[in-house]
Image (cartoon, rainbow, N blue to C red; front, side):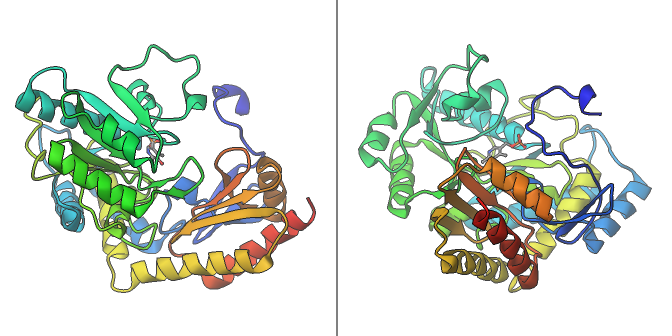
Length: 389
Ligand SMILES: *Cc1c(COP(=O)(O)O)cnc(C)c1O
């Protein structure tokens, strides 16, 4: 089968046939404990009964209507999503299918906002070194990691990178005559789970406000409860002008969203932007279940508690292979002495799925519904792999 795919992924030798909760099963019937959740996508685990029911019921009605019209389910989803993001300052949403598409929308909104208010020339988007914002030409232009850039230029003009945490560089880069927006991951995920410093995030918010530069949080990986607050930026006590979400938003179905607050909510007008699948009813039905579940009382506190369990067990080992643990809720990065890929292979053989982020970092993004006993079981398997290195 591999023969038919373009060779874009370094794949491990396993094909899955079914899943339940935090577990996947391969063709031979072997079970695997899933610390990846499809890279933060299956946030409620596999075959979560309310999600299965909602998708099934919607599929029995209709799968799609085009954006000439509305559907009750997409309206309900948009209303619930905006309400959930209102504490971060959000007022309106545009629905698409992926993270990159959401970030494209964010850049378009920032540029049009600035153009209409200040005229041409103020179109630069500043982002951080080590960031990841997507694989399209423009979102690659915003991605501050050289390793993704080779071979694909020329890139979209008007993007500038600065080192995270450097306040002077931030102050210099946020030139009010040329900059429309600042795009940040509050916690850099693909780089290996690096939370930004809170003084830095607060200073960035302050500078953006003073200079009327739109503050855009890419919460595609760190949002939707993953860090123990509904949005990671809320954990920093700051509001956004624009916010992007995707990955976990549909609990496994493809959904992306760009949201905007008071300044930018009405920047896009009729015909400015669109997406054939945007607001897809199946995805919206799934997204409603995700939002309802994550907002249940005590749910976010459980995510934070489980994250601490991961951290506690990992640091308790004092393992010579582990150089550093960075964790916020169920977003966990572990720097190793040796390379990460052989650990992924070793863990797979033991029936444990983990991710890497860069050559020496393991990354865990398990489903929010993971049980304590599963955390302990998975970490036990991991310890066996690390012991044998
Ligand atoms: C995954 C990711 C993206 C890209 O999302 P796609 O759905 O793959 O386009 C963008 N930003 C961040 C922070 C991500 O983690």
